[in-house]
Image (cartoon, rainbow, N blue to C red; front, side, top):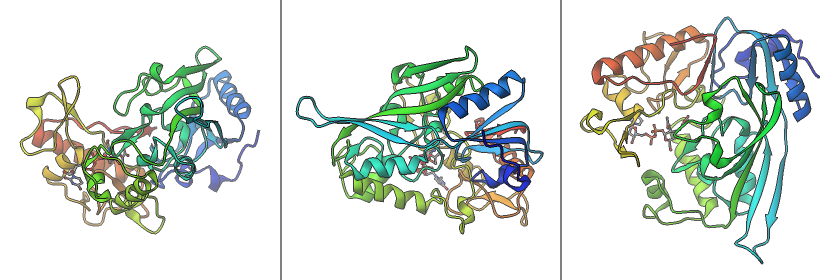
Length: 352
Ligand code: EPU
């Protein structure tokens, strides 16, 4: 299996969208499922700490790096079983290798009129990461279309395939996130509809951009373009020249609170169980952390100038700078509103 020896290439800053993180002690690149499982098993046999690396878009790695084996999931492949619609309702069962870049999958589906993931356009990262935190945006989340997830169970040392209904999906949550050291996602199978028209547009801002009423449908190619535009406006589409995109996307999840805990004037999205989801970005903004906020004027980490929920590296930042910013924001929101923000990215070798 190819072990990467070049010290520069084993620095995790080279592999994370925040461009932060020190070196890995050992760095292995797996390009097939068998290589992936062999690398994981070798580390487990040796009792060696293991970090699985996909697109690096949801990782905050310590400046000290990772004292163990990093396995880069570099598997590729999209295969589809397409029903022509003559007999049943038609659709595509699309199986994607974990290492496939997610937005390539969305583009592939939209180009073939396979509907169901178009609102998830422009999200950085790899496909194998999407079930772990049930990636969602603009009214869709992968839980709605995942038919099954194939995994390697490090605990039982066996292949295990979970049907979508058995993945424990909730807002930014799954059984894979609940047991972070157990499952290696190897491939994900999506059940998509054969349709050029998307489902009802659920997100108000997206409906406005498309010029339709909330709940109406729009062509999926237009949905993709509209989402890419909205995301770019918020600095949420990767662009090496734009430091606002040197981030891990939303740094905190949106808090789900008892209705009476939601601050006056904050966005409120009632949940089926009677709780209310509010907006972390709003809480941050109204606690006094405006777009572009930094702990000190010359700090190399700041809030994005386009969205308060993205913590960004302005170039030359260290992980310690980013963590100091995250702590200031978290503590400020707690003091102002009594709400404890929870980080969405995985912290490796560091904590808030
Ligand atoms: N807002 C502010 N200040 C800002 C930005 C936003 O006050 O600088 C307030 C506004 O009231 C706005 C509200 O926050 O209406 C919500 O903002 P937005 O519509 O941008 O969505 P979000 O809740 O901040 C979530 C996801 C994003 C996803 C968008 C669109 C989470 C943690 N974040 O953001 O996902 O793209 O909705 O669906 O659920 C990610 O998870 O990494 C991510 C980018």
